[in-house]
Amino acid sequence: MPIYAYRCGTCGHAKDVLQKISDAPLTVCPACGAQAFAKQVTAAGFQLKGSGWYVTDFRGGANGAASAPVAQDAPKTEAASAAPASPASSSDA
Image (cartoon, rainbow, N blue to C red):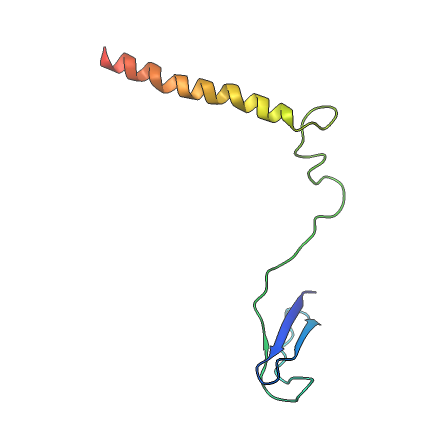
């Protein structure tokens, strides 16, 4: 269930509420009783838990060194820059 942030427009009271998505939004402020309790827009937060995140999926090499993928990218860049030069010279001929 998501946690929603609410704030009263009258007294400024703020509260985080654990609600179902299907529940109706709260409108009455628990501090002052005004009908100005509104849901705020907040950034969604999440955590990736368990095995299989970053350490086992995205790092290369037997010891987990991240330098192996970077070294492979460098020759591809040089080959890509050399490839456009060849067709350009052959099209001029």
